[in-house]
Length: 312
Image: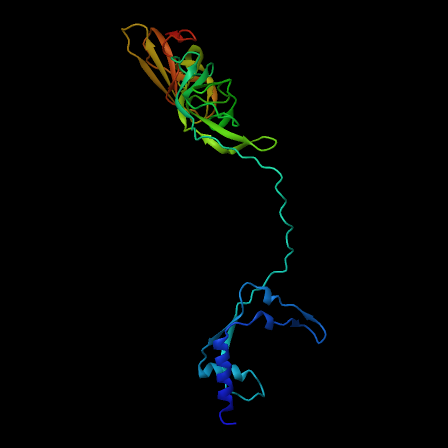
């Protein structure tokens, strides 16, 4: 027949152009062997298989037919069939368990605020290891269903008294003299049974305060160091840690002599005993104070009594 290949190719192209998708009813099971077949499940996929023409050059068609050995070339065209979805052979998970109960927690946005940190019970006294502290602010009590925590330098502490405007607690042991931080957190307690959720809730900003050193004893040394010379030994609490700087400050009890300051440098090892060389120190009676990282021991009489003195 005249131009039989061209007419057949045109009819096939016309049919694929008019009906570019493969009907679900035309999809047949996969023939594995002569007697065994398996369903492809392509008919149950969401997308239909669509035929799209692919434009091949004459050279590309020639290379394609060159793989078909002992088969004469006939007029042909290429089409791309898609979409074919390939599923993994994974075990289907069991259905989710039915919800039998639920808890709903709502609370207002009430952020705690710290406006000051003072000594307790005397707000005018310096803060030291012998005193409690009081956090003053607003919204310091957690709403119903929550809890109130106080963090000193990031470590959680247990307050002794909590009100909406003040929290009183004892300072933890192990703090070094110098700047410290305080923060109030209010995590929520939810669930059955109720469980504290530290990651949920609100918290205040950091509030800074200074832990001042306390002098317990002061003594005069006549021959200290090399070459030997006069010095003053001071025992402080809390112990000074390695890397902290120390200074001795002497205030004369007589106006005839000026105040004296002696640099003790930076400690290389923790110690509660500080020794300061005091060359050329004028004779007289002095009120003794020390600085630890610029935190000063009391220089004026207070709840702990008068500051220590020494006579040279």
